Length: 289
Image (cartoon, rainbow, N blue to C red; front, side):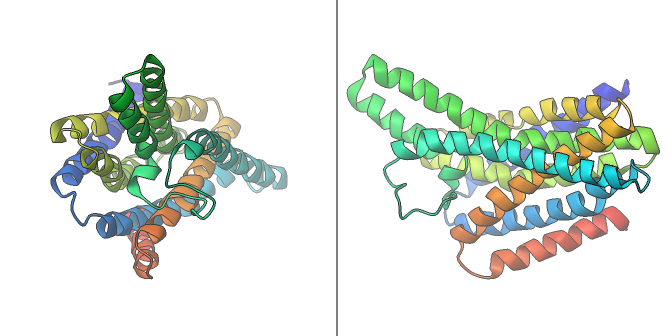
């Protein structure tokens, strides 16, 4: 099989299957799931933090053979990846938050419920309005809310695909099997993410099979991210460094801007921090054992 399509296949398994398994678990165990998902999100964040810092960024820096200018290139493109995902998420929040009743000035500046993480609360708000009024305008608003929710989920999954694609490109250029290890990590990482998507959908009244199927499909943007990451990574050492750095920055936003704040607000204790430490150490085992 051609290397490119092999990466697509592996990413589809990690993205769609991993998210779908999480979705199935989520709809079967919707009760008292907040604390469980909080720990799983923190654990996944710790694993990804380890992968980014001890694998992706180190490989990106290695492409410059110690050149100082290359170090600043990696730093700059890491900021670019982080900033791009941050700005796009900020635009979504600016659009949706004023339309959701429970989000006001006293609300934390990040999500503190599963439904807020994927903006399904915004979708449910418009769904209720459409069911009550039946107006054409409400129907259009419901459709837009669905698109916004899909885009928010895609923003969360796209960087994960870039991580896989860039890693496989790095393997092709420099040898190694880091891409497969990272694909496995992303697949495991997608299980709690799948739960975070499926739980609010099922709690909102969606049939369990439909919520599971829809959750699995939300992993599809991972494939697009992998295609882009692999394509950029095969253009040469500098392009590979840029691809690895952008993917790293995007994932750092997902970890620090979404997973950790969400998990701590869902369970206000020290348990999420411990789960993150465990995830980080498990990441070390995956990479070096």
